[in-house]
Length: 217
Ligand code: AP5
Ligand code: MG
Image (tube, rainbow, N blue to C red; front, side):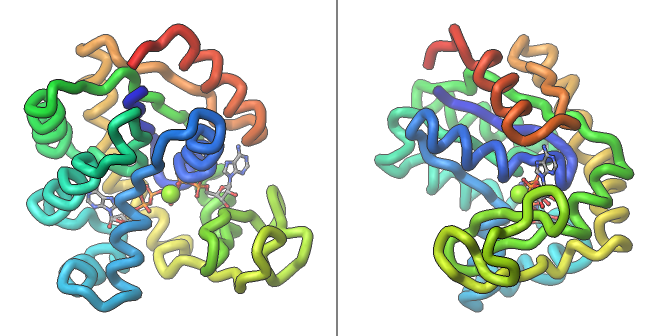
């Protein structure tokens, strides 16, 4: 199954992708995670991306498209994949369509997770992430049972630099200007499924599983 998760920052793409990956055994490709790792490692990609990410802007299409193309060639993507945070512009979506076509493949479904702006601000300003295993928490909505450390692996929890209210508001503007047009793009291709994101993560996942039933890929 070749799945793409669409949705504003904080709509729950990473949370749901981890659940889908666990349930269906297909890899989760998060361009945000790949770029953050590159920043931490100080690679050329990270150096190019950091300024854009800190400001809440998108990194240029030509930087990110090649990164995803490489991931899709990996053996573990043969049985399917979950794209989270890519494509993010119409140019990225067109390029993805072309690369998949070249591989004799295509997306099976685009899940569009819908959440209102004020809920997004609450979610992102309270988000904490395990620096070791990447588990996503929320100080109020999904706190770690071990407080300041990850309940899964004991790693320290950190807050993303782009999760301040000011940067989240900029990310929301960028989403509306550059990414929301993909809703129409995929609607026209008959791939879009809207998912009501303002329910518990477990309820959202149940809805997603329902939407994935009957989809072949
Ligand atoms: P990226 O990392 O992709 O960030 P984003 O799209 O802004 O999305 P987030 O990761 O912030 O949110 P999410 O939807 O994954 O929510 P989560 O599950 O964590 O991108 C970061 C930056 O990288 C971009 O700004 C850009 O610079 C660059 N970039 C990345 N991809 C790019 C591309 N293709 N092109 C160009 N630039 C690119 O949940 C959020 C919080 O809510 C958590 O605390 C969670 O516990 C909580 N939560 C989740 N679900 C629920 C629920 N149902 N109820 C209550 N709380 C919930
Ligand atoms: Mg994410």
